[in-house]
Amino acid sequence: MLNKLKNFFEIKHSLQILLKVVILSLPSALLFLTLIYFKILPLSTALLCYFFILAFNLFSLFPLSSEMKTLRRYIYSLAAEESEDKPLNFMEKDTKELANAINSIHRFWASKTDSLEARAITDAAVLDTLPDPIIIIDNEGNITGSNLAARNLFGDDLSSHNIDSLFSTNIFIKSVEKVLQGKSENESLIFNDSEHLRQRIYAHINKLPWFSKGRAAAVISLYDISKALSLEKMQSDFVANASHELRTPLSVISGFIETLQTSAKDDEDARDAFLSIMKEQAEYMSNLIENLLSLSRLEMARDKELKDKVDLGEVIDDVINALKIKAFNRSLNIRQLENGRIPKIIGDRQEIHQILQNLVDNAVKYAQEKSEITVEMKVVEAIPCSAGQSVAQGKAVSIAINNKGVKIAKEDLKRLTEKFYRMQIHKDMKIRGTGLGLAIAKQIIMHHRGNLTVSSTTYNGTTFTVYLPIKQK
Image 1 (cartoon, one colour):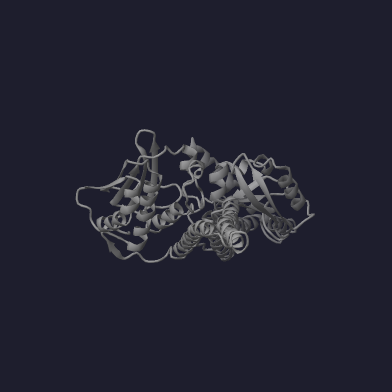
Image 2: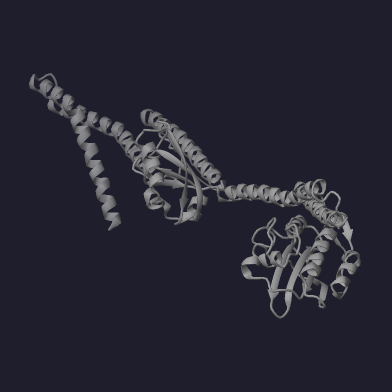
């Protein structure tokens, strides 16, 4: 069937060429008829000459017509992107020059297309590397493009949505309309979104210049500023808490000094009692300031290289010896346990000593009297993952410090490492503390790329487990 169609079209093409030859030869036919009419040429001679003219026109026009047909098919194939991109070679001068021009145009636009495609791919890749969502919209608010962060957040079918289907916040929609209607070149706003990000968002809507191509009319950039606001609040709370913690002992000391200078000036018993309290408050302020300085030093030394070979057994021995008297005064027994051989680890010995000092001191401070505190070390295959930080890979040493104290509630467990956070039950028991010990421990553990876990039950007390990697890699 296909062959028959092909033959049919070839016959049709041949007939068209013959028709053109006849039409081109009509002036010659009229001329010969005139010559025959006036008996200038005999009929046989005129017919013979006309036949030669027909043959000449046919053989002259047929190659040109055939090459034009081939050229037409080639142009159609280029338009349909079906060409193998092979240059055409013709015998006829006219078709050859035309084919060369078409090939030149084709090469130019092929090169231009490749360049534009490469640029588009590069631009898309650059946008996809940006961590914040970027959305491109047209004049009707329809989404025409987005980066990877936006697609991960809102879904891969983002281009089938209108911008008002993503955010229902009225102030955001009005800001977008203001930019699209040309009333403003750009708009910036902060709003809460409860549907997708569920956080505080800073949005910047920017009108694209008039010479921009395609349907794109504006670009919307979204930034999650919840963490920045949270950090700002933490810093504000830190300053307020530090000021409060320092103001209280200062007020006590100032009050006692004023009393000793006036009404209790000659009262020796009052003076001794007041001086004892003033000493206690001064020591508390000294510890608080030292802890604040420690926190500051740790935050500044996050990038400090860890290169000490630390024997954890020796560090724990030093800590237990330093706290023996304090434990004895509360009738507590501190027992050290080692499961197998504990290798030395790479870290900062002073910082690790400070962690264990803080944790064992807390165990002594908050344990029930006449109970036992255990410090157990062992090698583990990996450090448990942490939601707030990255941990080192490979084997680690775990140090579990357990005391038999009051069970810590779940809501308190989550906040133990916050700066200045202290449980209400400890305040009620009038146990003094700065609320910075565990915050310092957290900073040190983060520096070592380790982890800290806390568990608390009624029957087994509270266990703080520190995980420190054997090697920093």
